[in-house]
Image 1 (cartoon, rainbow, N blue to C red):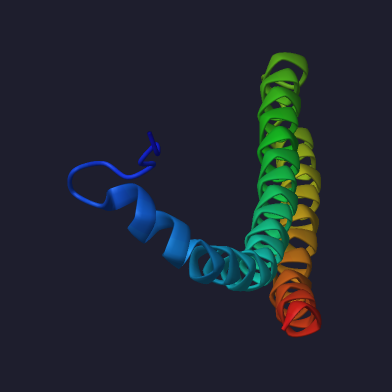
Image 2: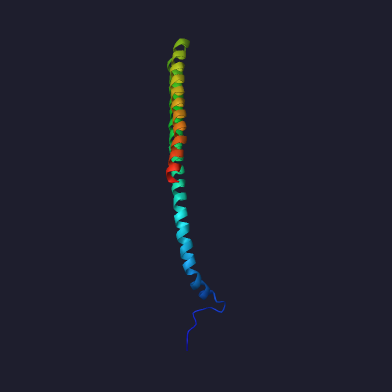
Length: 119
């Protein structure tokens, strides 16, 4: 008695016939998915760099707030010393903001370069 490897619907036989096509399709999919994965990785890495820069800037803002509070505690009655302290802190924050903007400007070029390299 011969054994029949097909189901009543013929699914197994159809699968066996189409298996080479499925293997070919899987290979094509893997080749096309890999560049997209690398593009996503480049995007995520640049996003992580941007988030680190923002965290650094927020840390600088917190430090400037602490310094300003300390200034008010130290120089309560002297407006000229408060003004000098405030100007120094404002300059530090402005420098941090300029550094932040410079980093953001270079990130756009970096991500374009990395995406182009992946393509």
